Image 1 (tube, helix red, strand yellow):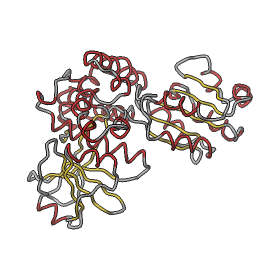
Image 2 (cartoon, rainbow, N blue to C red):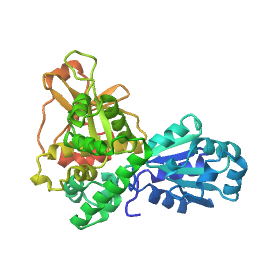
Image 3 (cartoon, rainbow, N blue to C red):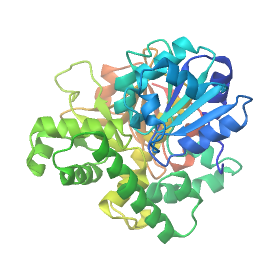
Amino acid sequence: MPYKRQISAVLTDKLQHSNKVIIVYGARQCGKTTLCKEIIAGNPFKTLEINADQSKYLDILSSRDLKRLRALTEGYGLLFIDEAQRIPDIGINLKILKDEVPDLKILITGSSSISIAKSTNETLTGRKLTYTLFPVSLTEASEGKNNFETIDMFDDLLVYGSYPEVLTTVNLTDKEELLHEIVRSYLYKDILEMAHVEYSHKIKDLLRLLAFQTGSEVSINELSKSLGINRQTVERYIDLLEKTFVIYALGGYGKNLRKEISKQRKYYFYDLGVRNCIIGNFAHVSQRNDTGALWENFVINERKKQLEYNRIFAESYFWRTYSGAEIDYIEVRNNQINAFEIKYSKRKAKIPQSFIEAYPHTNYSVICKENMVEFADGLGFIKGEL
């Protein structure tokens, strides 16, 4: 495996010492299968590996028949199912196995939280642990590099993203070709196969609109008008895109003050290479007019990865008032508010006076290229308290 994934040690430990079903979510091509096979290779369990894209095991694994399930797994210490969302009724069948064959270790992956979550949330309550694998983190990509070498990677990461195969590909044309393949063959394929989508081209148009509005507040009503579909359909498509790990949202932070915007949402892409592929723009950051939005997306992505991998449960927001005062990223943990202004170039940013007055005990930091490595590696990164 070209990159040592941060979550590897946690998954290895849980596989060895827990009897719960371990579920690893993440987008296609982000490295779930490679990671799991690496973990399996380092464990003593005799493993039955099943790729749910192949049909020969699907009948048994969706049968609810304990006798058939026992016969399939007999003699094995670990059952690994890759892309388990393709198996009907996977949740109830895993429950049967876990209840009746308690010593059997079970590890599954899924590129959508729709089918698996729906199937497992009730049936595997108290019997599962869930994790999310993202495209390669900055911490993973920079292992063995010094600070200068890591900062030198930023421009490429903003344009081509951090899918493992894209990162290890040197030729820029080859990177673009890989991203087009990921978008065509996996992103759209999974989305359209996993849900009943009335207008497949509308999903593609919606993604383009969201890509052009990265880091900006999004109006569902405006999207509805632009796409010519009703608000409920837009909301359903956005929910679908979130559950297939294409985009995620930040809501507005506020104490319901009349001057604060708290009902709008901003959308970000899990991978910037995918985002740039969708709009057909792989120009260098020095030739773009969206560099600030890319940098903001990148910084928040890295924070999201570290929170997940370190199992730190914080709430994330943006903040803005109707008068235009704003802060890019707000993180609330244990009732402590941490505010971050995100700037591509190194320059100071003054915190809005209205925010100080409303939230006087907030920690505030400016994140730029020069301190991004420290920010990505250190979850306690706060430069000063107001």
